[in-house]
Length: 568
Image (cartoon, helix red, strand yellow):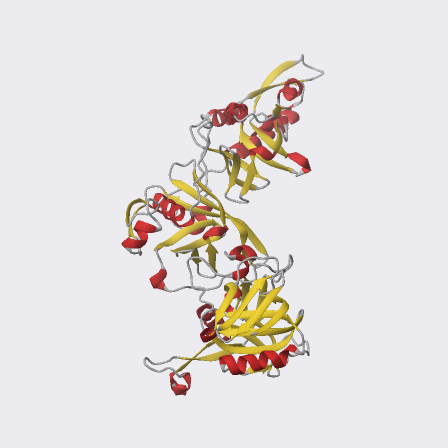
């Protein structure tokens, strides 16, 4: 038996002891913990090279991916090489990395990793188990995303629950780590179609090879090698063409045992259920749609853009009939009282139940302590120029769809209700500002209908939230402004009429989006067919303004003064 101290397994922060024996190898952390073992029959190949902490022993296993052991001394090569030769019948290959610093080379897909070679020497290798997702970022560009520590499930040992692949093997990696890499792949390449029964690609004639975009071929090969797409037989359920407001687009949702996949026209995402930290079911004010909102950590990435929340929009009257693709034994054991074999009900209920059953997350719905003036759960408001709905939950507030904003009640120091803008327009709407404790900043929600003031105040009182109403202090200012209007000239009356008109326009442009009549993505997401929430008095006021009479004095030296009515 050969023993080596201060060896690091898969970039773990804690060193351990590595032992080689005839039956296989093992590694145990120095501070105690789970022991990693690998049977000798599972060792396919081995490589020796320089690495971060000295020399690295890389083992390409037959079924467990790539195992990296770092921290060996240079003189350990002979002992290790002899052990692998005698006990495992494997030659330990001494490899030298390319040190030229070139960023162009040749990509090679091996059994367990993607190698980037420069002048026939490896510049770096990426184990497939470390790749969480890949997308076509452009015509000739492929983006590769790497697993984050929270993507894994079993820390140091790297064993994933509910799957055969080692996801998140580098769970003990440093605080700063590479999360994405992009490859520029110009030109075309030949894709060889392998006939049934043929195992060697070289047997395919050149005529049977298909020419296609090189970046597309790279992307498809990586998807297959890294098993990002999974296989159709593992899919428990599939929901087609589901509208997403964040990130925007329509995606097919494939539900697997430990993750789900969003398949769109441009982007594909694979998300672990354990990344779901919050789960909301929020009914929209149109009584036609409902929003399923998932809080993700780590957030979804699309290039430089991060999406901490996933927002789906589903119609309430869409019925679906679906049979889950799982055995009765699995339903009766692991998913007993969580999932059913068959569902036939509205799609938003089916999606919610399947997500809840597979992820184990509690579904949060709007609080019963709040009902808006019009009997809805959401309050129409805006964050800057983005219109949406603010939902009052039992322990938090949630604004959707964009930017999806989550505020916990326990983190709120005080809520301020105030008017912003001109005196006339401010009398119809108000803003609320949530100031957070400990100087954590604030969130402002504007253009809230004045009718929602009382329901909101009652909710704040029910949840013991400190709030102050600054609108009462503005009453005298509003009265003074109204009195000053009577002393103005006709020009001032025109200006006031214009102000009133713009205020009416602002009021009627309050968000009434996401109507069911639209069939297009854009129209369904940002519908402009608004309806005024007022009683029609605004229109009557405009008509009165347009036909009102103004008395004007006409001064003439030869005739006495008289009053003439001028229609305006």
